[in-house]
Length: 508
Image 1 (tube, helix red, strand yellow):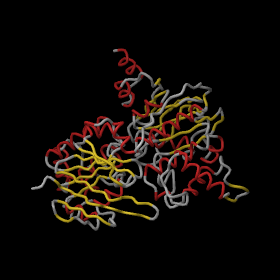
Image 2: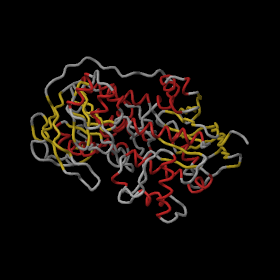
Image 3: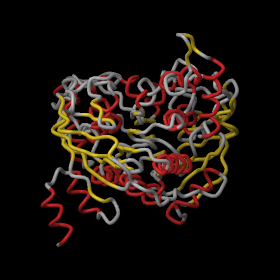
Image 4: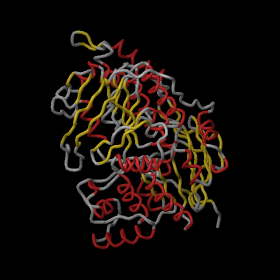
């Protein structure tokens, strides 16, 4: 039997104004962990959607196990042995694990049988999971296990994973990689998409690189540096963010015992958060997903109101003010969820520029929109942040996730806020774009802004932060100088250790 499981030949898919995939050809072997690399907008999502039956190619062929493979829908792909774990989980919070898994099965057996199979598979592959747990109570890593086990119950020949570690702790990444290596040893092929190139080097056997929809090369990741892979993806030298010397000024944003109840059943209450962020400073806040990041962002943006005095901007209490009033005073926020929260997918980029830029950019006059000025602002965002799109008239939903992220971050930075709060600034963004976004945040701080970066990417936080604090179960640790922090110290902070314990580790 041939070692080739899936062969792609000349796949091409065009949309109005853009060729998403152009004559793509490569193969995936049985039991191979194969990386698919490319910058945002390179065509990765279109290609895996083609394999999974969500997109029909204009030209080209696929063969699976030596037979023609033309899935008309995901159900056909699953029957043929192709499973996919998406970057955004498709789970119902109010249902338990077994019920969620049943929803993804063609002919689900009784709940008791599903629960038994979940326990068997979770034990076999080292993915601890209780089938009776309510999904809304699970961590991000546990939710991903639900998606993976749902796929494994289909006994797939090919498992596609899209940015699987973006919301995982280092420990959860290790568990995931052990599982994927075990699947590989059993003969399951894995097509792995990630912008974390050191993970690619650690895990993957081969890599295919896309640029502007076309295959531009391949490599053996373990024999190729992360920098070389990044430069192959972008076709240029990679610019590394540089921290300029900058003066740190007054405390611009001050939190005094910030507390707030959980906004919904599965939310996290904020508990007595104290913080002072100074002009010219980058404050990094780390934490495992679900420890109060969204609630903290909502309290800072004005989407969630708080008692007077808990949130102070330039010594003015703003806890009762809404988002527009806070923007006017100079506080801008870029939330984690870009499509539907930071941006409206069905609206044009011009309209999305107006959503938060109307006040500070003067995009309205006497109640009327100044479309020419709004268009110019959107064009400036697209140009300065290299947003790959045919034009500002395109909808936000037509952009790749990474390009929409660049637009959202650029929209806030170009308004020159006094304080910028950004949650997961480079989530799902390629290496070159991530470097550009980090540099823009550093430049904003160098110009005197106070910047709060909330991220699960510890490397990112250590690269750009002056101070670091950890969020755990709605509590924020005492900030510490980021320079010199060890992995052990950071791990204790993320786990909610007291300062005395952290100090003990630092001196032991």
